[in-house]
Image (cartoon, rainbow over all chains, first blue to last red; front, side, top):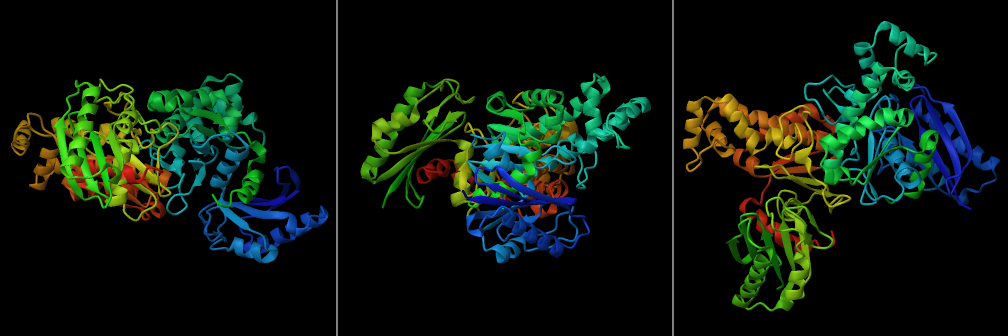
Length: 319
Length: 319
């Protein structure tokens, strides 16, 4: 039996996982990585954690096929260097691959988290069996990864797949990225929260907040719970967000002609409350000969997505 | 010296060209193919024409590497069957490859004209030396072909690249395709003509018509000539069309991260009158780290594009 090591670097939390070559998790260790933590310290911590996971399970380094590292972009997958992720302000030009290769002398693959998750969903989740597959995260932001002709497609400078920042309304609301009318500004979590304030009464907002204990501002999770409980205003907000997601997917379908698109977080939580308006908008804004060739489904890996994203990189080193 | 044969099937005119393997045209014959012409008759005509071109130049069939056929889609490139192009109403399920292979026993490659022209611009024109390249026609319609990771990308059902029918204004003007707010409906020839009627005085329109003898309705060519002569209204119309093209290209840049995009007909005629607003909109609607990695240039093959599109198919049979 051979083993894989996955390192998932996040803005608030990171994790190291050890799995067998069928992607069964053998052991996993996660720890807090605040935005202000020094990257050298974090890398040392990863190295120690990998050593102790292997020791604890008496696995020789020679049995480890490789190490996959998934991290927010921008990063350089060819050199294995993390460049300057917005959620990790101290991580500028951090040579992760070199550090881990020096420590373990095993192959190290570094990829941005959207691409890595797309690969994981394609190999192990909602994209299995396809050759042309798109995965989109759908939470606070909307980001994507493209599997084209049976291979991860990175683009000229490794930044392909930013489908959340296509423009759907040239004079639309300001996006977190600084542009106007991006899909993300019309359909992601903050857009749902904005619509709450525009459409719901203070009493409704109060009620929705009670559905998400601990939150002080209305958010997508509360709106989904309220809609599931029959609140028409909440359902209308999801319908609007789903419509814009559907228009964005219709554009992807016209341009890329994929056979399947999988949608993350919000689509998993909301199900048809979001997927029905998504599919309705696709039927209206994409050509039937293209839209009927493409399924739109929720992502499948759920809570396992981040670990699998890092681990799957070991097996797709060449593409 | 080996030879290539190209067959360009159009709605009004078709052409057979014979070239050496450096794409120098040796001989060419074109003829009218009205929309109502029987496809069997047209195929017989192609076969006779190919025979006489080879005879005239004393070229043995054994010296012919292959035959490339470029035609409006939809078509099935795998089987080499033309399915039902809107501009050729009698051509439904026409097995072009089988007919030409039976006649000549040489390899036959059939591809839709947007993909074939993208390949030609990539191999011989504005896309030379790139690995990730997009070509867009920009005339009466807007269609495209994608070269990704050094290969023509066809998509799940051979229909990828319909970038002219991405939605930029969900409630925008009706497109010829039946959808609303497509890039094509906002930036192609008919959109320019529509803006003439909205923005120009009858006197201006009269003057613009005088710039395009033989035309009875204002069109993009007249608007370009008027703008080149200093007409501000005409320049404003081009600016608006260019702005929408730029937003559409920004979306392609966000999603595909290409290194070069080449634009056809109108961009070639208008130059910076269209390309300046295109580039301005890209700077506004795409991220700098993506837009600065992508050049936007006019296509280079011009009048040779259609012949080269058919001929180049011979050399890229496998991708």
